[in-house]
Image (cartoon, rainbow, N blue to C red; front, side):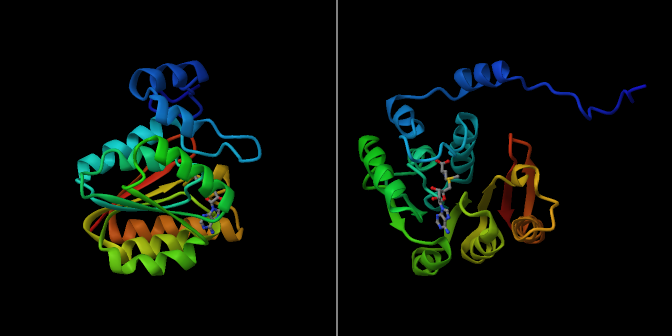
Length: 215
Ligand SMILES: C[S@@+](CC[C@H](N)C(=O)[O-])C[C@H]1O[C@@H](n2cnc3c(N)ncnc32)[C@H](O)[C@@H]1O
C-alpha cells in the first residue's frame, strides 16, 4: 500500500499542464518567439519558456547588472536575461559553434539588445579567463558542455560577487547524474562545489536547475 507521505512516482506534470502554465506565466513576445524557433541544422536544446522566465525573475531578485552565460545556442535564454538588466547592465555569452553564434546575434539584434549582449565565439574554458577583468559578476548561467560543469562552476564561484548567483541547467544530467562517466563526475563535482560555496538548491525543472547564492 502506498505510504500517504510518499509522493514517489506521482506525476502531476502532464504535457498539457506544462503548456497551460507556460502560456499563462511565460508567454512569448515576437523576440522570444523568434529565438525559440530553432532553424534546421541546429538542435532545439534551449531552456523551456518557464525556465527562461525563471532566469529573468532570479536576475531581477538579485539586482543583477553583469552576467555571464556559457552556452548561447541562438540567444533565447540570453534575451530573457538581458532584458531585465538595467541600462548599464551587460551580458557576455559564450558559444562554441560559429553558426549558432551567428543566428544568436541576429536574434539579439532583432530583440533590440545588441548593445547589452556580447556573443563570444569559442570554448567556455578558453573564453572565461578573458572575462575576469570585467568582473566580479552578479550571475553566471551555465548551459553548455556538461563535461566541463565542474570547471565552469569553479570559475563562477571565483568570479561572482558575494551574494551573486550561480545557475546550472541540466543538473539531473538527463537522468545520468549518478553514472560513473566523465559527465556524471563533472556534474556531481559542480553540485558539490556549489553546495560548499553557496546557499543552494536543485530546482526540479524537467532536467534540473541548480541555483546557488555565493556566501
Ligand atoms: C543547451 S544549449 C544552450 C541553450 C541556451 N542557453 C538557451 O537556453 O537558449 C548549449 C550550447 O552550448 C554550446 N557549447 C557546447 N560546448 C561548448 C563549449 N565548450 N563552450 C561553449 N559553448 C559550448 C553548444 O554549441 C550549444 O549551442
